[in-house]
Amino acid sequence: MRTERESRHGKAAACPAINTVTRGGDPDRVASATPAIQSEQRDAYSLAEFATRHSISKSHLFDLMRSGLGPRVIKAGRRSLISAEAAADWRKQMEVAR
Figure 1: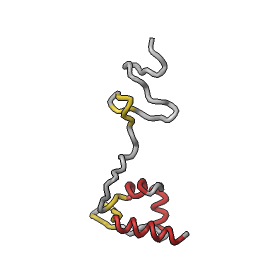
Figure 2: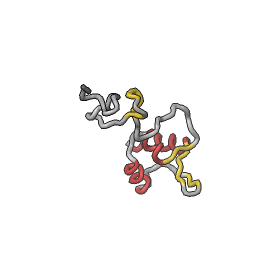
Figure 3: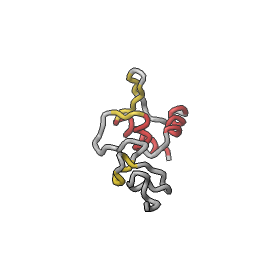
Figure 4: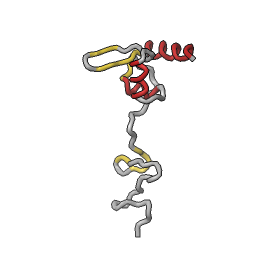
């Protein structure tokens, strides 16, 4: 008989308490809703990457931008990017604001 932790295919099921799904049936690789943050420095970040790296939600970032407290944004076609320099300046500005 199968245990509670085994799925129909005989592989360990995801823990229902944290509601995750495994990739390819490998219980050691857990799927993530956001891509892994690279430790390397990048020249520019998407708005979603910036929000993730600074531990704020995208909606809070949009609220900050709307109120004039957000970082400087570069428009590249339809994409909006935030340069590493603008991110550093924004962090300094936010430290002084408090």
